[in-house]
Every structure is written in C-alpha cells, then in structure tokens.
Length: 435
Image (cartoon, rainbow, N blue to C red; front, side, top):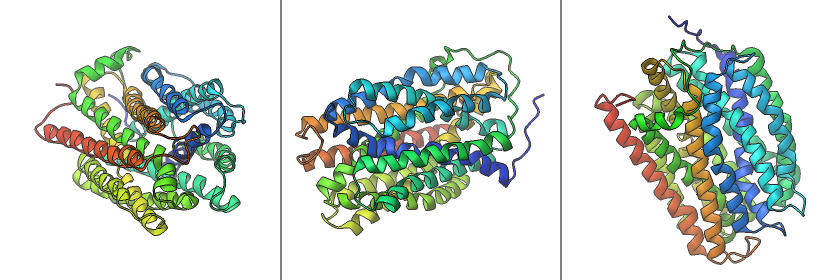
C-alpha cells in the first residue's frame, strides 16, 4: 500500500508557490517584449524572429515528453522534483542575461542558440515544479489550491517584472532598457524564490509502480485517452490565442490604439486584474469544476479581445479597462488546465500502475508551447507579409492587427472553451480516462 504524503500547512503551500513567481515572471518579457526588440535589430526581421521563436518552441515537442518520461523513471538524490530543479536553475540563469540584453550585432544564430538552450532549462524547471503537487498531497482540492497559489504567485512575479522598469526608468522607456531592468530583477528573484521550496518542502512520495514508464510512452498515452486529447487540444488553442494576442499587443497599443507610450501601465492593469481573477475562478472551480471555470474564463477572454477592435484611439482609460477585463478572465486559464491534468494523471496511476505524472504535465507544457510557437511564428510572418516594415514599426495595417491579434485569439478562446466543455459532458456520462 502506498503511504500518502501529509497535508501541507500554509508555510509549505507558500514554499511551493514561490518558484511560480519566478517561472511565470519569465513569460512576460519572452512573449510581449523580446520579439519586438529582436525584430528591431539590424540583423533580424519580423519574419526571421517569428520563425526562430516558432522553431525553438517546436523543439519542445521532442524535449518535453522525453524530459517528463525521464523524470518519471528517475530516482535521483534529493528526489525527482528537487534534483531536476537544482539542475535546471543555474543553466536557465546563465542564458537569461544575454538573451534579454542582445548586442546590436545579434543575428539568427545568436537568438536561436540562446533560445534553444534557455527553453531546455526552462522545460526541466517547469515540468518538475508543475508535477510536484501530485506528490505533496493526495487531496484533489488541496492540489487545486496548490496550483492556484502557484499561478497567483506567478502574477505577482509578472507585476514585479512589469513595474520595475516603470519605477526605475519611467513610462515609455526603450524596450532594450526595460528588458535590462527585467533581466536584473529576474536574476535576483529566481534563486530567492526557488531556495525556500528546496529547503522547506518534502521530496514527496512517489507511487509504487508495477513497471517503470517508458521513454516512448507519450504518444501511446495520447492515443489511449480521449480525455487527455481534448485537454491537450484546449491547451493548444488557448495557448495559441494568448500568444497571438501577446505577440501583437505592443503593436496594437502603439499603431492601432495610439497609446504605446503607456504600454507598460496598460499591461500592469492586466496583471492586477489577474490577481483578482485567480481566486474568483478558483472558487468557481471548486464549486462547479475546472471545466466550467475554464470555459467561462475563455468566453470572457474572447469578448474582451474583440472589444479592443471597437475601442477608441488615444483613449488610455478604455485600453486599461479592456486589458483589465482580459486579465481577470486569464485568471481562470492555466490553473484549471493543470488541475484537470493532475486528475487525469492520478487516474492513470491507479489504472496502469505507472507513475507518469511528470509525463502528463510535460504533455501539457508541450501543447502550450506549441500553441505559442505556431501563433507567434505565423502572426509575425503574416504581419510582415501584410506590409510591416523590417523593424516591425510604422506601417502595420490595422486590418491585419485586428484580425491576427484580436479576432483570431477570440476564435481560439471560444474553441478551447467548446473542446473542454465537450470533455466535461462526456466525463459526466462516466467516461474514464482510458476508454
């Protein structure tokens, strides 16, 4: 019989959530700030930057499942979660500064090399941390709260990264200066947030296994589980929607709404609203389940995204309000998907006798990254094709920005809600994880 880990107190909950602050904070500069900066360099273009970001994330299709399966098979010193976090953190920190502070001579080789190395370290760190709740508590509600706390801490991290350049440089500072401040802050908070989890959290007890998971088991797992396929599809669609919106948000604020000088302040409204959105959608998730909570969040995000198309130009207040609405709904985005994936992993563990929690979370990370990769790559290539200049400024057409950055994400949000709602209906008819 497997011994269940003890229930966690507040100190350990906070210790688990703390690394989420740093991990999530990394997404803001990588998605919203870094692509426009690299596209402005002499040796790169919008299309080249989009293609590099897309290919770097597509590489995760290979690395994510392999990393998840490797973690599930491993029994290293410090435990499966702590060992991989300790291994990945220094590598990620080593790549962070040169990635966010490129020289003027940076070209495709520079960007591609750093991105591939950075994403590999990030993959190991995020999968190990995301899979940890399954080992820390057997209680589904407790796991949901751990994941929600992690996402809430992530919003705090994004706010800190966003506010730091505004505080030190003022609103409207050049992108390269803002990223320099962000990089310095991230290098400070990454070790400060990760160390408490390594010191205060237990390793967690892995379930007894009839056999070790196979490195090639990811695709068989996907084929066997309709519920898993629908969850991954919802993750792919929602991730693509947010990526398309984030990758174009700087251009939409600057060229379509003419409020680019207040971009960081507008983004701050998004983050602050997420702080309120996460506990609101957490209550809904505990009441009605993660499917309903996620679907409502996606519908709200779709409405807010389309709302930007009708916002008046030069109206900072309108842009802030719409971005706040989008941020509030984003509070019900990833933690619901992670909660459902941990449930599926638990069902699989009981039915198959294999502990494949890391692999399940790796698959979720893979589809999220795939959605981001395809969206950023396709959007940037199409923006240049529709008439953007080499630096991605000045002549981006409004129709392209609205279609690619607002309407297309809204459509993907709606489809993600439909896919997971369909899964919920089938689950209500007593569908198991493996039919």
